[in-house]
Every structure is written in C-alpha cells, then in structure tokens.
Amino acid sequence: MTVPNDGTLLSPESTLPPAEPEPPLQPPRPGPPTEPPSPTPDIPGPGTDPAPSPPARPEPAF
Image 1 (cartoon, rainbow, N blue to C red):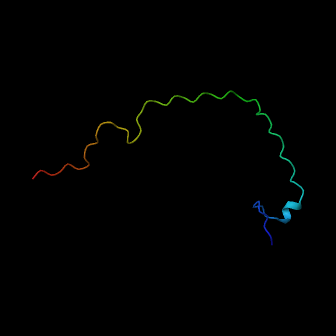
Image 2 (cartoon, rainbow, N blue to C red; image 1 turned 90 degrees about the vertical axis):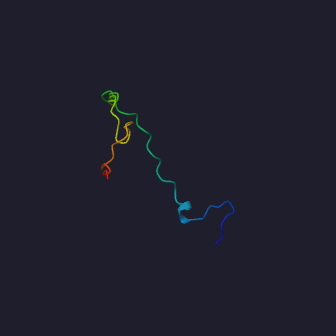
Image 3 (cartoon, rainbow, N blue to C red; image 1 turned 120 degrees about the horizontal axis):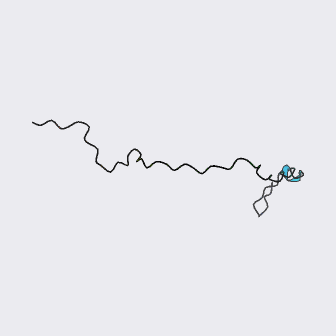
C-alpha cells in the first residue's frame, strides 16, 4: 500500500459522499433577561485569613 507524500491515507471512506451538512445555528430563543450575578459578600475564604492561626496544641512548659 502506497502512502501519498501529502500524508493523507487512502481509505474507503474517501469515496463515500459527504455527510449531510449540519443545520444552520438557530438564533437563541427570547427568554427572560439574565439577572446579573449577585455580588459575593466580602468574606475571606479558607486559607485567606491574614491573622496567623494559633498553634493546634500549646507546647508544654517544662
């Protein structure tokens, strides 16, 4: 089997007619206006606390 220099392989599928064309994209149906995203409250998430976390267990004083 010889392979063309352009890199394309000759397959039986190349002799089949092209598949039916995709239907044109329909315009989006008019719906309720999308509400703007509600502003997120200014609450720091986990790991964003600027204050250093206290040690889990205080070291015992000898």
